[in-house]
Every structure is written in C-alpha cells, then in structure tokens.
Length: 322
View 1 (cartoon, rainbow, N blue to C red):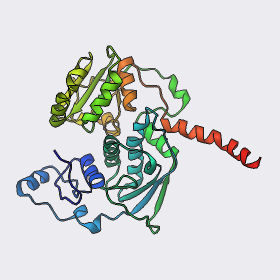
View 2: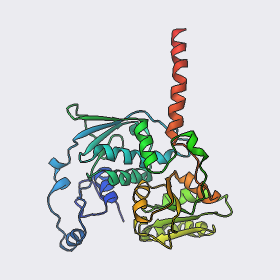
View 3: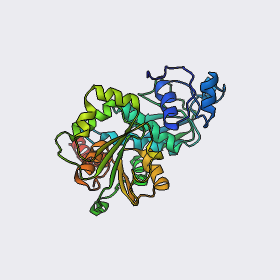
View 4: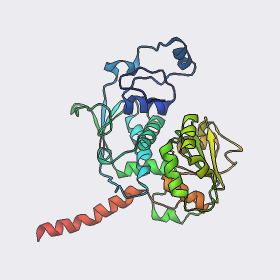
C-alpha cells in the first residue's frame, strides 16, 4: 500500500505506526483504542480531536541531543535510531517534542525512522514528534519552549535499559543466544536485502534467526527472489502477519537469551516471555549473534565516536597554542 499523505486523516491504533504516520508522513491520527479503529473503518469517520486538530499538533518542549556523530561507514550506525528514540521518548513524556541536535546531521533510512518512531512510542505518551532534518514540515525553533538537553550518558542509560553493554568490564560476560528476533516493527524489503547481504557468505546459523513481516512485503520479497535466498540458511525463519509482542512458546523458548534490533521488543519482552536475557544490537550484531551463537560483545558505536572526539581535543588545543 501507499504510505499516508501529508495532512491525510487516518484511524490507526498501533502506537509505532501512529507515531510514524504523524511525524514522518505528516498524516493525522490518534492512538485509537481497540474497536474504535474498527468503528472508524466501518463509518469512515474519526473523532475530530487530539492531533487531528492543528492547534493540538504544536510542540511543547525542545529536546536537544548533544553530539554523538557516527560515521556513515560504521556498520553499527543503525542502532543509534531506536536507542535515541527510546531516550527521547522518556524525556518527552506527555509533551510533543521538537528534536534538534545530533540526529539532524545523521543520514536516515526509512527503516531508521521506523525504528526511531517505534522506540519513541514505547516510552512517550504522545503520538507525534518533530525531528529536525527528517520531519515533513520545518518548524522554527521556539526559544520560549522549555528545553531539555540529552547527552551520551542518556543514550548509554537507554542502551543499558535495553540490555546493552556500557563498560569494557561487562564485555567479559559470555552467554549463548537462543533466538535472534528481527521485525518489530515488521521488516521491510530493504531490511531483508540488508539481512541477505550480511548473511550471504555464511554457511549456517548456530542460533535461530526469525524475522516477522507483513504479507505485502512477503509478496514483494518473493518477486525479488529474496525469500528463497534467505530460507537457504539453516535456522532462518519468516513469520507472517504477526508481531513479536504476540509470540511466545514454542517460537520463543522458555528462559531464552534473545538478541533483537528492536527497542520496542527489548522493552516489552521481559514482561511477555521472561527471557534469561535480552540484548539490543544493530542488524549486523544480530547476524553475528545468529552465526556465532553468542551474545554480541560490543559497546555502543557512539562510545567510540565520543572517545575519538575527546582524545583529539587536547591535541587541537595544543596546536592552537603553537
């Protein structure tokens, strides 16, 4: 299906889809409760309230994320988006934010923005954000708005909440991986292409790698020959038309150690399936975990960016005094 158009009124209910539609597409929809969305579908009418009204779409807080630039060549760069979305959602809470700072200057794929939206919707109570550099409408910074500044420490806190390692000492931890869970929100054709590119030189997987997708994506991927290519890997599985938050045993083993690239699933899984451990990682980290059968022993990529910047600062100052 075509994505929603800017200004189009919708009757959606899934929180991550609502955030994406409002914030990235510029459409208008509430987080409609169960059965209300069915009533909207039957009648073609939605309550004229909330963010359907322009006066209720105004930002109430400016959230500025300080420098955490990650090189475009870094294979871990995709993990910044769900972790930043999670941290910014916590900071926004009940206020629609306009988000400035580091993310303005990072290139973003549709998948990156999808994962950001899902993570934001997991921790925030509002259905809309304005992400400078990536929003369909450009808003002037309103200096009268309250301002919250997030730092690398806030990213690290979110990363740790989602099961990631935050210190070199933690990297001594060893654990087998029972399941690698990808596709929350549903994986796109582009993400399946990225998965195949990461997997194609591997012969077998030591841990299950399961991806959830929608039927339209499945059909498109079949036309590209992607499905046959991916299913040749022993341990790879596709599940259609459901969500990781609806899956449990036997798809998810009891007391499992799980790796995922989804902040949403890393947040909800402890209450849903009681895993032994759940850890967020980049898509390449997820593939490494499936191939090796071990937890990805990695610090977040912004730690290295920050370390390089910090270590270069004294030298720059020294040069200035020459």
